[in-house]
Image 1 (cartoon, rainbow, N blue to C red):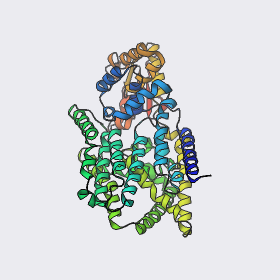
Image 2: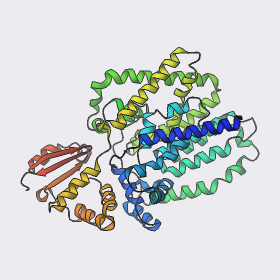
Image 3: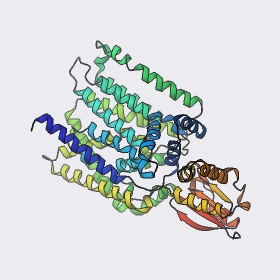
Image 4: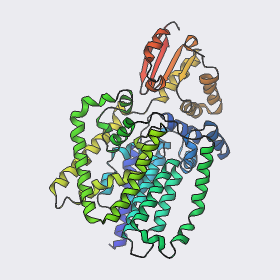
Length: 478
């Protein structure tokens, strides 16, 4: 068998493996708020209506142009169920695995990462951003290995930067870090013949996407996740290293960060194993690279993280692990490198193996344990819909996009208008006129107030709890 054919078959095997693992990671769980918003827009019958709906509903979806357009087209071919729509992330997972296939053990580490596999199953552009991060890492490796005086890796680098910029506005920060890192690694580029001309050829798409993002910002579009703090940054680190599946759920930690304390007995040893594998990989990588490469990699990864942390604190924006998706491939690479050192280092073998086993356990927990399921908008919508059909007044204290998705999917435009009218235009103005109150994430919606006391004083009793929801019924309602 020729080396070329062997390489092609190896790549094909990785593609099949990535598709199989990704398909198993995707669930049929209810869409949560942000997913439902994207899914509802994807149901629009034509591009003009889709664009109009994006502008009317505002939010950050407008600032994810390529992903949202791709999702709209994907729905027309693949269908509109939760599983079918989430499957749009499978090509990006394949791209992420294949981009760094020349790094030994990368596919193993990538396809056992709880962070990677959780977001493969989420209808947001985070897998696309991780794919962009993997392409960027591969491009930066090519730049570092390029011949002196050459422009090796330049077009791959600019392509990766453009891919990141197209995925979302927040990823522009990572594209900037990537460009700075490349210049630190190859400062000779600034004086190299042809550098500026070749770079200039890429300017039209960068200028176009820059102008588009400027328009969205001036128009007031963007995310509205308030509550930036050191705690949110700490949670981002906790999620990124892959421990979330072994500890409290997102909802538990958001309601009470102290929920993690009883589980530290196994979380701390697991974190120690992961950190040991990571540090061994970093040490090996440091020993094989000159200071310039190390500094360039730091600029490409750490400066964007610092910028996002500062933005989060100053602008009261909640920075979470998913906002750091572009750096995940770079974050996971040291563990793959640790595996590469196992021939001469038994400690590396032990810690790298434990890191993978911890990842598998955490991934399985996130995939199958009910407490880690996404907020159950589907069942909450069904309960509200049934109550409205019975003539009851429902006070819906949650985002409306996801119920609109479920209504539109079930009955088209008439069902959508009925749902929107019932939950918004004809909704009761206060508890006094409501038969049922549906509350999403009461710890956020009531901002520290004792919502149970408020509702009980208004003659409501807790009827049912769902993931992310509480259903309260008026005790005097039939």
